[in-house]
Length: 410
Image (tube, rainbow, N blue to C red):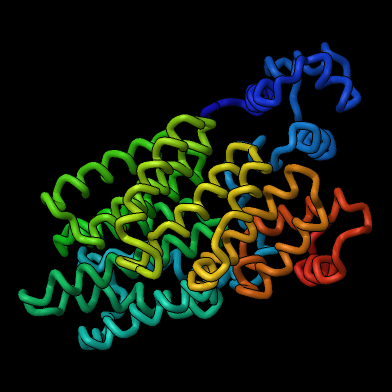
């Protein structure tokens, strides 16, 4: 399966993965074999969400896997960050200060480099705590200040200023992707790579690459994301010398993990497994409790990505088995964003296998750890709606309350 496949071909792909004949599949969704054949060949359109949900239930996959890309942000539901703030971030990203006098915008008064460094560090911590509303507000200012500080810095400070600007763009790309703004996420990530190149930090270029690849994956370009992650991962390791540092291993490993996610989204199980196996070996060297270049790379984070990749492959049971094998103490040491993100992934896995009470429980737990990881993300809204729809009134009361607050339909 690739991101270019039409929806009918994706249905055929998942039907075959589940080893169902067209007749068996047709019987389970209450349609004729001829109807299934026409859908899979693209002769007939699949444009009713009720039927799409029925198909997803039978195939034990998320609806978004059938649609081929991440859910898009909806102004009616993604209400943890105001649309005006997203528009302000868009305008900040679209500024081209380096063209100078061609624009009549008022010049930005730069701040000292040390102050910018503190602000960027605080922005990372805000992201890791999944406080996306506060982060969006601070990014508006940082996206204006960063280029001004680089432009006004003395020659010897320019690389450091460029690296800080790359970090600002990387943070922006990550939060925009979570908010369901993949095009903006791609723009920010592309800017991050350019800034990191001016700063001449190969590892920062590596982490910026993961943001570009993630944005590409959200746009449905998973094969391109896979190739990019693998290429840069190899370069990072080759430039690390005969005795790579933990930081080099961490960035290399993060690229492998994101490559595994892209491979899973393509339905490429062998490649996903191989990349995860390689990441495991490197993670054993680095160990847990590290956060080089904000990657949180280590054995536990590899396990989280193994579960997430299984969900993308439609293998909910595999994701659940991985989840229950994770050491609780190591898991608790991860930043809130990572833990809540993982619970959302595993909730999708439980949803795939039809264990709706456990899916609902994990969604509630994720919201307790990092409320905005659930309230801000379109994919979380979609999973909540799907669990409520399939639960038929038996969902946890807290999940129902959350859905009502977010104005989500079952």
